[in-house]
Image (cartoon, rainbow, N blue to C red; front, side, top):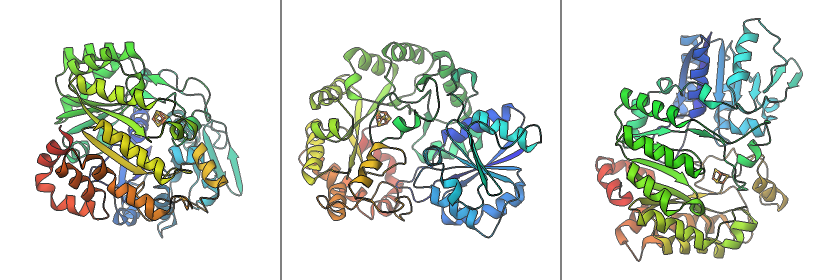
Length: 463
Ligand code: SF4
């Protein structure tokens, strides 16, 4: 069967292309079962318009969309266009997993997939070939006539080693690498055990039964890295697991095996309070050149009570120091504009970053996700009206909340000045770079400076 995947990735801050792991996994799995897969990567409004031409050229029997909450409006736009595909249409991803009622509100969409899509899609291909009933496929809500068939989801896949490696060839993967300074992305685990109230993980964990956090074996990780390095020009690897150092023994083994076979630098994400000197030393010896750590908010009380993150500021500071002392660069992740946040809480986030002085940082404006506790808080407090995912701005660069104690203008001001205020006493040039980058004209200015982007990155990020 010919299967067309559609990946909307429109109006994103920053220039890098992305590799969507979910689609990569589904494509690999469906190819293993004899199907042919194609991708329409929707990067601009023009690509939304091109959907008809591409679908006519390929003539797929099945069209699979995926979308984050902010991108779901493009799925609706595509399906509302003048071109009506003959193929069966299904959408997956975290947004419809947690808000499957979108099926009723999206004309032209035949089904949504709730949770991991490998087996639901495989069963769907069988149904479309007439080999099984369509309306009772586990994991799918299906629209047929005036009926919606709401099937519960199958358990989480327990052995992820049994799955094929993600199909990077579905994308123009060399261009994806080149667009991000030669960085190839990997994700060796599924799920995260923490309960941060702004993140989808606590809600996604409820959709399926079974063990949510799963790891690939070290042997499989090494095999996947080897395959990618044999097939593409890569300068850096980014192990983009939610919390790479979750299991100490696993990390130590990973580092030992990695350095036996590979020499390229790599980046990871983790939480500050689970780091120790031994882990940092092992990471450094294996070639780790940057550790990304979520601070998210600088107020200990707010972080614990509103965000469900129980680490102390002292633990965060210590985590960053351990990484720096091991000779590895650090990058902090931060969010402003949470429901119930005040300007003084946001100032604490700036202050904590200024005290830590990470080598680089990222700041976002809070975006609510379906099924999360903080979305409920925003609605209960009356900060949010209607559909927050229809806004025209780039995701996480502006707020959808109306909060009397922290106005949209104030949130934007904290966001735009965040990096400047963190670095203004330590490096005026870095401070100015962040001031420009997080202004409304940041992407435009960076495009002008793109001939110097490698120098800028080395200078700003240190890697
Ligand atoms: S640790 Fe990170 S990935 Fe895990 S729940 Fe919290 S924000 Fe989400």
